[in-house]
Amino acid sequence: MADRYLEISLVKRGISCTARLLDDRAPLTCEAVWKSLPLSGDVYHAKYARNEIYALFPPFADREPPLENPTVTPIPGDLCYFSFAGAELGTNAYGYDREAHPTATVVDLALFYERNNLLLNGDVGWIPGTVWAEVVEGLPTMATACNDLWRTGAAGETLTFRRAP
Image (cartoon, rainbow, N blue to C red; front, side, top):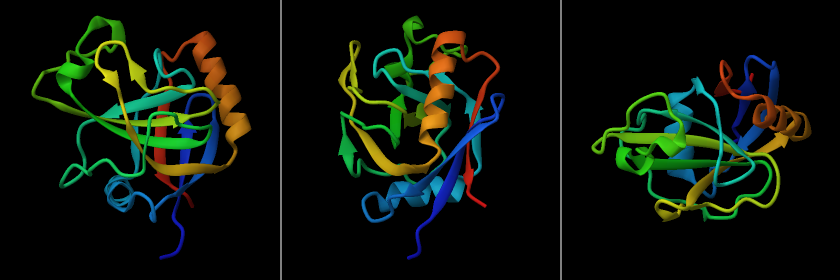
């Protein structure tokens, strides 16, 4: 199979980077995401994991992919896939503008842009994620935009994932 690429964008800021899917390490996750592109949603900056931006989506796969190529210490340029039951994100500490239902599933697509990340959440413990893609172009510019998002706020910003042209 030929390499597949996607573009990740912070729409309002006009910043994008390119990532290569890790089909050899996370084939089920890659296929689930690829079939669902484009995906776009409100962007959030992590509180616990440090240097992470992400968007939340309703489940989009025919079957939820299992944990593949897992990590709890993502490195700069890793894209991770997480699936949460609504109760795992249900406290006000997360700052989401919608109610989380205990029976709902939420998919979190995340981009890690700098070092020293640790997927440990004070409410539920270790949160392993599937590393399904890696940024191969534009990470320094994206990291600058992510730091700006951290300092100035995410309100009104959208994170978009789409197939690279």
